[in-house]
Image (cartoon, rainbow, N blue to C red):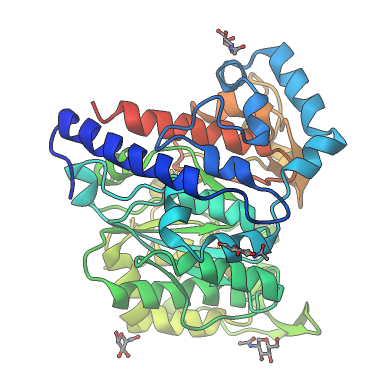
Length: 427
Ligand SMILES: *[C@@H]1O[C@H](CO)[C@@H](O)[C@H](O)[C@H]1NC(C)=O
Ligand SMILES: *[C@@H]1O[C@H](CO)[C@@H](O)[C@H](O)[C@H]1NC(C)=O
Ligand SMILES: *[C@@H]1O[C@H](CO)[C@@H](O)[C@H](O)[C@H]1NC(C)=O
Ligand SMILES: *[C@@H]1O[C@H](CO)[C@@H](O)[C@H](O)[C@H]1NC(C)=O
């Protein structure tokens, strides 16, 4: 299947292009909300004239941080007509995926590994979603490769149409599946971790081939191509990459007292026993990049299983559990406990996040990154087009948060950048 030379590849592309053209001629717009622009993408390459509502924007100028273009783009994205044009109802996905072949062609999913190097290094993804199907589908498309494997956890409390639409999308791919056990996620509570754990177990059981595990949520987007991700992971030489630092005093309440979910909220309970085996609880984030052995430890190592049980009634266990496991001796790819091995979110490659209180200008002692050019949700930056130029210079594999309804052009330009880079790296 996989082309061995550029010539063969060109041949293969022209064959596919031909059949796409036929498909395009045969399939007119059949649904009311007229999403025909989705069918107009040229095979593989996202061109500037693909007819999508965002394509009127000059991504090259946006990536270069051109002030005038950024201003024009921001004005465009707040107009009523534009905002209306970017809405895609859940029903669209349910319908469009009835014909999987056409769906994958028209949405330009990759149907073969782009290189031997990527084929030899399959990845496993856990994606936790609860709304905004369009965000999810564009994320999936951006990271999709046939050699990888994807477990999707849709929140049990999601609307029925969201669950149906995501189920319909996953049904088009043999290597994308819904988690076997769905939980109801409550902000800062245990089920957020359980959602990932359920996917970890499913992924571990589904295939013995994948080398690294990456967890995502519906509002993440990649900053690197699959090839770049594979190379970054190989460069870790078996190590894991995530935030794992000393626990600040003001966060220790999170696990010194118990918490329980009451009517969808977390309430404080009685004092907890110290962590099992006197494991030092580390501070970290919900998003990790870990090797297969780390996942085996999470699923099978009795010390970790005990730690997991102990963590179930704590506050925001997602922000200490992975970071703590990363320092347990014997866990594959883990680091020693000494503070010299502490790693901040900025130094890890797992996730780029802009926290409100760390924004500022370069040269200030407090500032960690330039100010957010989008807006904030729970003190986290939802990126705008103005963040792209800086973001693409960072080493992180993924960035959080993106929102199709906050700034669709930021996502559109990233999609284009990544696909062009992936195709350029073919030569
Ligand atoms: C879904 O698409 C089919 C053709 O693929 C069409 O016959 C049908 O009317 C569409 N349904 C809706 C609700 O638009
Ligand atoms: C987009 O911006 C780039 C860089 O500023 C410029 O060279 C190019 O001509 C622009 N393209 C269009 C179609 O305006
Ligand atoms: C999922 O939601 C349904 C109601 O929609 C509820 O009955 C069920 O207990 C929930 N399951 C879990 C695991 O939360
Ligand atoms: C793994 O998958 C098989 C079926 O493919 C199933 O029978 C088995 O129970 C699963 N094991 C675990 C631990 O989930």
